[in-house]
Figure 1 (cartoon, rainbow over the protein chains, first blue to last red):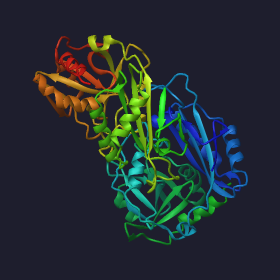
Figure 2: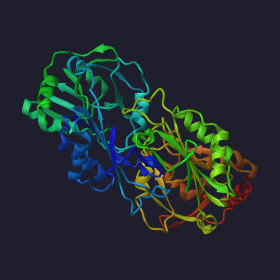
Figure 3: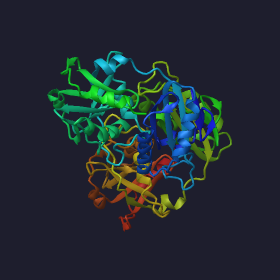
Figure 4: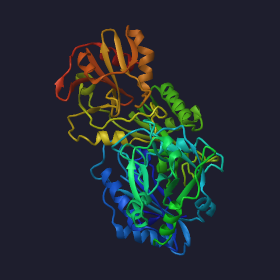
Length: 271
Length: 271
């Protein structure tokens, strides 16, 4: 792994960083292809939006991009991670007036997930862990991720590829590391993320691109039973791309709808 | 500041630690008096309970205590902090099977809060930030503290000493860094913490000790209006001890009830 911390090579941060003390920060994972971050403009927009929500200082786009490209030199396929915290602070929850944010950029080579998942679909389960409702944090990819950690700890079977999560209201929100979509004719619906959930970069990308293929994407309150009426269910995440769901808790979903494959074909063309 | 990381002097942790990546860990702050942690047995019990809830490995009591005492040598008055994470892990939410926990112990000299607060009472405000409901994490002093950070960021007036927090249901739960109690005759009530909130060590201590003074302490669902019927309201936290509340949002509460002062007198006798 190659890493820069505030622009300097290193792999350690201060034990007094508020990212550790309180999870007071945000992050993003980014696919690297041939030394470059994919869909960078979309990733950067999400970073900016999340930083603004938590009153973190704005990030210089050129600086971030230069650091990623520096670390990704010679990396054919890999993962970049950007993590931004409110920096080192004295004890106590109050945001320090004079804190310098901590900026962590890393790149790791990585061969990606098995190709079969994007082609044949994945097996998912239901998680018992339910997401809480917190409008102030909903959608942000912040460092308070214990709910996802607990949900992911519910299974260890390698043939289960993801876990769907409901919230306290009983609504479908996301999977542990991906957003979820239901294809209903020419309409695609995805859970509203105003109470919880993580707004993935590819979710934004899909909102902008599905109309090109004649689909319409809408946010909705989605009860779990609605999954079984869908013509196709698929997941999105910047590293997995788009995965159709083949089975939920062992039960097969309809196969053969072209929507996810069409979107994959469009996505593969993106730099 | 003096710090030990996994027993070794140092002030940095791996940037790959899950405590930073996901807030996957717990912590405790402890008052130091004359080189020793106060109410250690109570603090250790809370650490054990929280570690078990998050499936973190058990902590050796003698080792932790020895590290605190080592760092606190010659410190008349100060603050110790113990922070335990699930350690360094590969990318992804799944708990690594072979992770070694990260144990961080630090001691800082500190003169304490102004004495007048414990004697004359404090001014508190209402926070707009509402706590979410999450039974799986309720009560745990974990590293996912963004709600507290947002609540504490609502004011900067140094004459406001704490902020009371409601939850999504509209119930009183705690203050940003302390537990809250209402004195109603010989009965004291404190919010139930089965949906959210942090179970402070002194809260446990109070449950065990108020009967000695002829009081009874009960958990309850507490609507905010009930504060105005109380004969006294007070706060607890291992560093502040017990603070009576003098004013809420500028409005004076009844003064002169002996309960908090009686408990302070009992607390001061504890090692």
